[in-house]
Structure formats: C-alpha cells, structure tokens
Length: 506
Ligand SMILES: CC(=O)N[C@H]1NC[C@H](CO)[C@H](O)[C@@H]1O
Image (cartoon, rainbow, N blue to C red; front, side):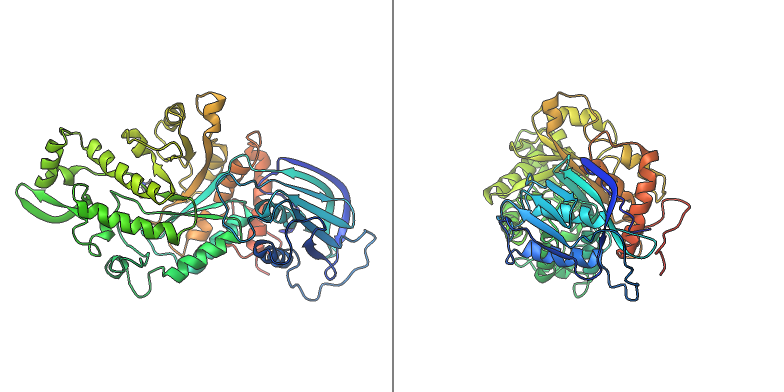
C-alpha cells in the first residue's frame, strides 16, 4: 500500500526488525523531547509537528479500532541540540543529520538542528504502514542518517510558462517528501518577466505575459520564501544575464544592446549592453533589491548561452572593444560584464552561482563561487577542470527532466553520479551536490507535476543516499511504492510502469 514503510531516499544506516508497534489513531502525539533546545515557540517544528501528524494520521473516518496484540507507540519525541534556526533560513552546509529510534512506547528523534529534525520527521512518516486490518504499524527501527551532498536542488522555470503559486507550493511539498533542500527559482528569462520589482515595476508591467495576473508580487515571493523555510528548503533566485534577457527590454529601455545590420538598427535587441554606465547603475540598484527580497546567501547570476552576434554588429560596442584592446574576442567583453555583476553582488555580501560558461570564458571568480555544470557534452572533464582550479561545483548534466517525457530515463537520472569524474579526493569534495531542472518551454501547470514526479525522486536519492545505493532493479519497487505514497499525499506523480496503487483513486 502507499503507506507501506518504504523509505525514499534510502537512509545511510537502517536497522529494522520484524517486531512492530501499533500507532493508535487517537492518542499518538509528536512532541518536543525533554532535553530539546527547542520548544513551543519554534515555528519550524510547531508547523512540522502538525504537518506530519496529518500526513501520518490522515482523517480516515470509519476505520474500525481493532484491538491489536502489539504494544502501542504513543509518542514521537523530537529533540534538537540547538534552536538557532527556528526563526531563520537554511544555509548551504547546515547539518541535516538525525538519529531515529523506534523501539519502545516513546520513539525518539534527535538532530543537531531543526533541519535534521524535518528530515527525520519525513523518514518517520515513511516508516508508518497500514496493516490489512486497517491499523497503522511501525516496525522497531534504528536509523542514523545524513545527506551525501548538501546542495540537493530543483530548478523551476517560471518564464517560459508562468507557474501559479499553488504549483510552487505543491512542488515544495513534493520536494520535502524527497528531502530536496534547494528551490532554484529561474524566475525570469527571454519570454516573460513575472517578478514584480519594487524599484523597477515597469519590468513586469511591460515584461510579464500579463501584468495583472502572470506576476509574482512581493507578497507572493514572501509566501514562497516562508513556505520553503518551514520545510528546510532554500530559495535561490536566478536573474540570468547578460543573455536570456529579452523580457527586460521594454521595462528598462536602453538596457539591452541594439542590434545593427550595417549602419542601421534592425529593431531587434541582444544581450545586456555592457559598455554603458547606466547598465551598471541599474544592475546595482536591481541586485541590491534582490539581495533583500531573497534571504539565501546565494544568488544565481546565470551567464549561460550568450550570443555575441548583436554585440559584434553594434558600432558603440565595437569602439569599446578597440578601446579595451579586446580585439574581436567577445568572451572578454562578456567576462568584463560578468565580473562587474559579481562585484555588485559581493558588495551586497551575497554569494553567487553561475552556469559553467562563466568559468569556461575565464571570468575571474571569487573563491566561494559555485559553478553550475549543465552541458552533457564532456561534463566529466568539465568537473575535473573546475575542481582542479579549486572551485566548488554542482551538477545538472543528465538531470534535465524537461527532456523527452519517457519513463525510461528515471534510470538514467538514477545512475548519473556527480562525483563520477577523474580527480583527487579533495576535488571530489568540491562537488556540493546537484539539481534536477525542469525548463518551461513545454511545461506549465497542466503537466509539470506528473512530468517531474516521480522521475525527480531518482535524482533525490542520488543526492541524499550513499553512492553505493545505485542498483535500478532494487530501486524500482521502492520507487513505485514511493510514487504511490506521493499520490496518497496529493502529488499527481505519473506511473513508472505497469502496476497499481492501493489508494490510487479512492
Ligand atoms: C543553462 C541552460 O540550460 N540554459 C538553457 N538551455 C536549454 C534549456 C532547455 O533544455 C533552457 O532553454 C535553458 O534556458
């Protein structure tokens, strides 16, 4: 059944015994443990206790209260060593370790901090299974768990198609069921600018598909930030420049490069114009706003797929190239631009992620830059080069879920290992994790959920579990059961293959 005790992602260490406890439908409680540093004023835990109580004991009226011979499990006691993060946001590198013991009437969950407690609550909720007499049971279990990688992300693209808030929330729920901990919000791009800026409202007024409906107001962004925080999920916004910026054009005239054919403008616009002071004045004010609206230490600055043809055609830019002695090497102009954006972001005391082209084009990067590898072509040598240069990196190559919607490739995602490249142990340690990406060209609210889930779950286990957990034959039945559980929890995850879920349409 969907409630059948299958754990996904696979914890590091699990000792399970056949003896089982009954979880009484009334009387079971999730509470703060006696020695916990957190108490009733810890928003993250208070919300999580209620959320998981309802996931474990959904209102299923009419289930007969059978007398069972097993002992009852009455309490899950949750203890954290520090309450430091109760009112804060998660950070890259925060511990998510936890220890879960179910072997007497009081189960205990201990963790360094609230994020580990959230991961342990998810695991506990997965341990609960439904006996055929309808009672809920939990086996005697001892679990010691922590993630292999600290950055386990999902990229959502809200520009190619707008995604309504409820879709963002539903994905944050699904992410928490899979222990993902980063929402990479690729919020704007060429086709539309849905982010409603405080400083530059014209950007969405002129750049959104519909400025009245297809926008994210400041309240919406705050709601996403809080919904994510309560699930221990970081929200990393991406404002991709100098390419992928067509939608910025009408809202910020003069920002983009005018393209020319000979001496005449063609009427089309290209990357951000990197030679004007007005560009950097705008970017400074814009990214200062972004630094306050989003709470994560990191901002993703993009830097992918810059087409130089427009820059080559523009007379003012040609003069600048000559003045800077860049010759006709337009990667130098791109690097000049990116470097100044990095300086703006660093001045705001923020860290940054950039797509791999920024590294490939020899931009001078700060020591804590995170380089995001996405091209499948020679991605292993790319990872060797980046880590040999001493930079931290994360991987999305092989994890572009937007590609052909075919059930087979969950195995491809599952078998792709972020540390599968030539390098020293020190280089391997520079891999902070990875992200599954679902780009929006062919994806919107009508198909994102089933296209993403359960295939993204394969990435979730790759990023959380030990690298040795990589047998697709063993994983398939577990993933099929995990998919049924997601279905039970309201995530319309598509089937992997022939089969059924006990509660698929009830
Ligand atoms: C970093 C990156 O992936 N850039 C583009 N590459 C192709 C994708 C679709 O598969 C998207 O169009 C995306 O914007």
